[in-house]
Image 1 (cartoon, rainbow, N blue to C red):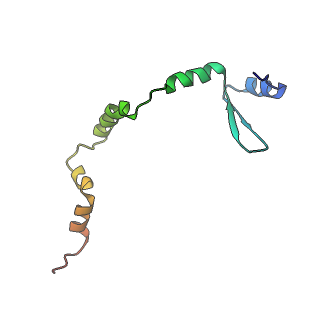
Image 2: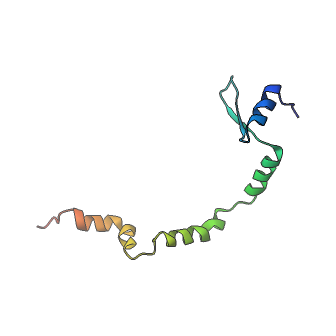
Image 3: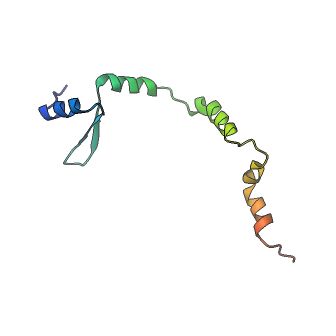
Length: 92
């Protein structure tokens, strides 16, 4: 474990926001947060994240946004609808 510098301690106590630090040699940016916050983030991220766990919420959101509306059929078949509406018939 590495102790904080006096300047870092002052910066941390001056704000409740995470402290952003930059490595002057590489210009890499780092964020210094309290260990408790870091552990909380790790716990929230979890190890076995599976995108399929979000499918139900995605579906519900899409339905609330109107994706089940029959007019969306035109969007689902956009290329066909575009050709019918916007391109002249070749035989006329």
